[in-house]
Length: 412
Image (cartoon, rainbow, N blue to C red; front, side, top):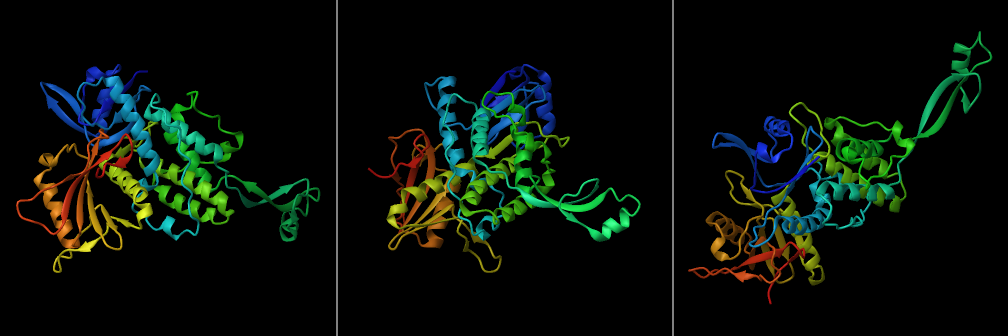
C-alpha cells in the first residue's frame, strides 16, 4: 500500500490517495493536524503544524514532516534530509512530551533516569519504521517487572500452604483434595500492561516489518488497557519501579515513559478506534523543547542555570503572568529566549507581535540579552543583533538554530 509523504502547509486531495475512501475517512475524523477547506469545488486538507504518522483504513499511512522551505531541492532530497534531523529531535524530546497533567510523578521519584540510548539514525526509514526500530531496541533492553500474586486453589495435590479453615469447609466429603494457597510470579503488572498496550495500539500494525521482533509467549497473558486509564497505569508503573534495583529501575523507567508518551500522542478516530500507527506531535512545542535541551548542553560548562517556562507576575489586579520559553542565568548575565517555529532569515522577517512579546520579556525580567530563536537549515547563518530606533538597555538578537546540526548558531 502506498505511503503518502507530505509536509506542513501542504494540501491533500482525493487525488493523492490510491483508495478514495481513505480521503473521505480523513475528512470525517476532523483530526487536529488538518484544516478542512473547499476550493474550486473540491475538498482539501491543509496540513497544520504537526508531524507524525496517521494510519489509514486501507492499511496505508500518511507521513507528515516539518517544512523549512528550500530552493532548488528535489522532493526526495528534502524528505531524506528532514527525516534525519527529525529523528534527532524526537530522540532528544521524548521525555518532554509526557503530559503536563503529570508533572510531579517523575520529580517525586528517587530514581534518576538515565538518558535513553539513541536509536539508529537512518534517513532511509520512514518515521513509522524508525519509531519501530527505536521501540524494539528499547524493548530488547527492558526487563519485564514481575510480582508475586497469591492463588487459592482446591486440587487433588498440595502445593504451597494448606488452608485449614477452607479445607474443613470445602473438603470434608472429599479428603482426596487439598485447599491450598500458593504464590507465583505474574507479568500482568502496570508497567508491562503499558508496554503491551503500546505494542497493540502504536506498533502493532508494523509487526510484519523486518524491523520488528516476535513477542515472547509470556507476554500473551499481559492485558492492555483503555485510554482513560493511561494516567493511572503510568502512576502505578512508577510505583512498581521503586521496588527494583536502581540501575534496572532507571533503564525500565526510560522505556516505560517512552511508551507512555507514544500512547498519549495518539489520536483516536471519530468512532473511538485506534488505527496503528497513528501518533502526532505538535511541531512548535517539540522544537521549543529541543532548543531548550540543546541550549542546556551548549552552556553546561559555563555555569548557567536554565529554567523553561519561568513564570513572572505581570499585573496585580488580574493576576496575569508571563513565562518566556527559556530563562538562562549565570553569575553576571541574564538571557531571556523566545523560541518560534517560523521561517525567519533576518530581522526584517520578525513579526510585530513577536517583537512586542520579546520586548515585554526583556523589560519585565530586566534581561541583559533577549533572543528570538528560529530554525534554519544553514550552518553559515549566524546570530544577528536587532537594532532599534531608540536605545535599549537589553541587547536583542535573532539566533538561528541549525536543525541539521542540532545547535545554536551563535557569534563568529
